[in-house]
Amino acid sequence: MAVNLPAAADKAVVVEAMFDRIAPHYDRMNRLLTLGMDQRWRRRTLELVDLRAGQLVLDLACGTGDFAELCRARGARVVALDYAARMLDHAKARGLGGTLARADALRLPLRGASIDVIVCGFALRNFTSLPEAFAEMARVLKPGGRVGLLEVARPSQPLVRLGHSIYFDRVVPLVGRFLADPRAYSYLPASTAYLPPWDELRPMLESVGLADVAREQAMLGAVQILTGRRENR
Image (cartoon, rainbow, N blue to C red; front, side, top):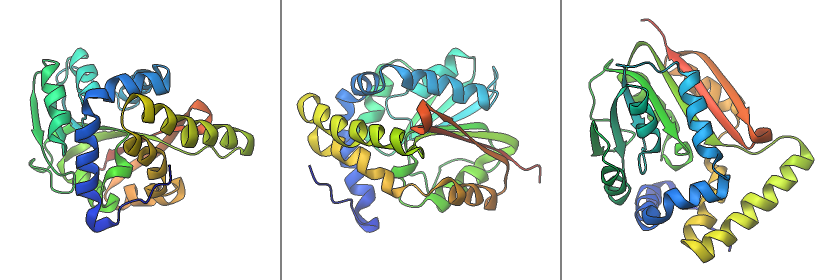
């Protein structure tokens, strides 16, 4: 199915409606399409940000609450925010404690320097402005606070990239057509076009005051984890 990605002016409305539609299928499809590896990648993200008991974590674009649940299992306190109301309904149904609320990533309803750790799973390409989203993350992080951003990527090695493209661009939409929502699961692979390459993402993150910015790759480059630390200033 050919996909026309929404223009910037329409993106927030289109993405919100899409995630509201797929909320009932979201967890099942994540486990199926990643063979359950998505939870391993989330746990690895929490290791990289050195999440500790008692810390206050922002799960940004929390979806149905996978990250929030893992954070609470480690003894952290959680604020979970998402723009799609039905995704939050499913997160609440899991019985997660802490704060769950609808919010825009570009205008976080949080005090400056109030958060110890920010995590975000597979959502960067859905934000309408990455520079603004990164600036908000940096604003609410405490000095020394850490950020861990889990996201898809396109492998660089040609043969791996070809195999990945066959799966991600053809198989994923096909599975989505039969088991969930054809438009959504055609959009999700195509939306990687919104993601800048690493050599552009890194200076974006550094420009908002993050230090020690790094990237770890998984699944032969099909997944990336971006990390950074708020400078002590």
